[in-house]
Amino acid sequence: MAKNVGILAMDIYFPPTCVQQEALEAHDGASKGKYTIGLGQDCMAFCTEVEDVISMSLTVVTSLLDKYGIDPKQIGRLEVGSETVIDKSKSIKTFLMQIFEKHGNTDIEGVDSSNACYGGTAALFNCVNWVESNSWDGRYGLVVCTDSAVYAEGPARPTGGAAAIAMLVGPDAPIAFESKLRASHMSHAYDFYKPNLASEYPVVDGKLSQTCYLMALDSCYKQLSHKYEKLNGKPFSLSDAEYFVFHSPYNKLVQKSFARLLFDDFIKDPSSVDEAAQQKLEPFANLSGDESYQSRDLEKASQQVAKPLFDAKVQPTTLIPKEVGNMYTASIYAAFASLIHNRYSVLAGKRVILFSYGSGLTATMFSLQLRDAQHPFSLSNIAEVMDVAGKLKSRHEFLPEKFVETLKLNEHRYGAKEYVTSKDTSLLSPGTFYLTEVDSMYRRFYAKKAIENGFAPASNGVIANGH
Ligand SMILES: CC(C)(COP(=O)(O)OP(=O)(O)OC[C@H]1O[C@@H](n2cnc3c(N)ncnc32)[C@H](O)[C@@H]1OP(=O)(O)O)[C@@H](O)C(=O)NCCC(=O)NCCS
Image 1 (cartoon, rainbow, N blue to C red):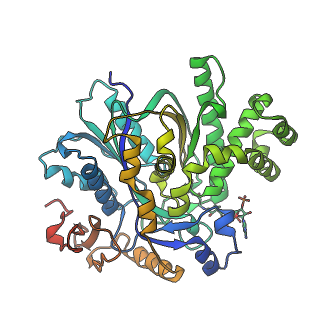
Image 2: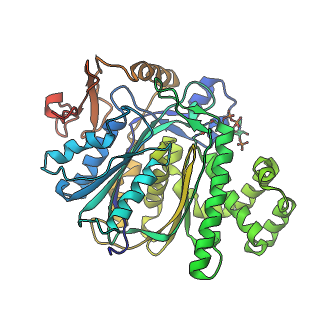
Image 3: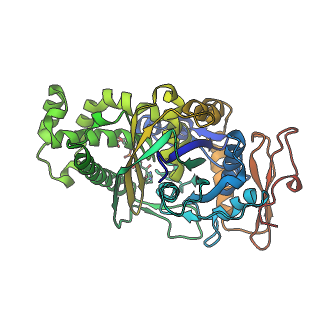
């Protein structure tokens, strides 16, 4: 069986167009600090009319193969996680096949996985399980998480975002799965869902979603601790992992989640936290589960107690989700990418715990072990390829009015046919794919902005209806 199976390489793409949360706050008439401090968000990326989940995934897959020198024939499984529905039958994976068909490789298993923000994790597990199985043919797995998170006008709108992430999966990985440390919680809830097929916007009960998230977190942490104890003869606590990475719809929920894990540790064993913390948490020790989710005082006390540990174990994971917003399936992996960006030189030998959540609801907590690996799959090279700082710096800020106008146009175009886009690539980096046209049969056409001269007509790029 293949050993140390996990993520060998990563790349991330997010649109270069964004809106500052401070400006949006003022524009929306929200009280000052609501989006920036209250939700903990700094900025939000969004797709203009020339980008969508397919163009972003074409961009990130092409970039990963190119930058790590991977021959497209070496890919044996391609899995996509997304909750942004462009077609109810044809998978995003089939659009990506054009990259591989050109090289004579059509022998690639896998399709799309979807359940809110969890689809990327399902796709990743499928690839890891494949490499660990008897069906593995020795080639790489490739996982793509791609989403555009947009909300109708209202309180949820500032929790949008957009991105695509690609991850190459294989043995002897610098980011290896600890396969026995994985625990899930799945149940039926109406916290966030997309029943209106004519609209890209979800129906969302934000408060319920937060409670569902925290309940799933508790349940996964409890199961993971049991499994850890069975294997190691002692219970799991926050001190057993160096970093914790959370699915991040908005940063405030990540702060609450880590504080919740510390409270779980305290309930399990009060001596696992210091005396000052014990005193602060003691008044909440006898709350029922439901009471504890509703208690604002507990939320405040546990966040205060957890702050120093949060700064050490979680803060390095928050950069991209705060700057780009919720990327749905890509969100947790963007948080993980932030950790690599910030800490690549000290990660080898460390355990990282991830919590993936998708409304509806599905959740898994799992463990990764970080290791030294040979170029091009070293952690330092992954950080260099992703170039998070460079990509953040070269973005273009839109005024809120322009952001709202863009969303209106995209609303109008959602599910529409027979239109051509502006094909305006002036804000896109060379090598970025963009939408040029949707024809009378709803077929979508994409082109790639040329690397040399800044613009390539559709005929120069990949034609994305297959033929
Ligand atoms: C998150 C969400 C519920 C917030 O909406 P809201 O009801 O308008 O927000 P609230 O009034 O609760 O304010 C949010 C926070 O900002 C704080 N806040 C409000 N005004 C503030 C201000 N001027 N300065 C600082 N903080 C402020 C609130 O106290 C609250 O913090 P808390 O959670 O610690 O109590 C909403 O954006 C949403 O539904 N988003 C979608 C999230 C989701 O479900 N995603 C997918 C599932 S994972």
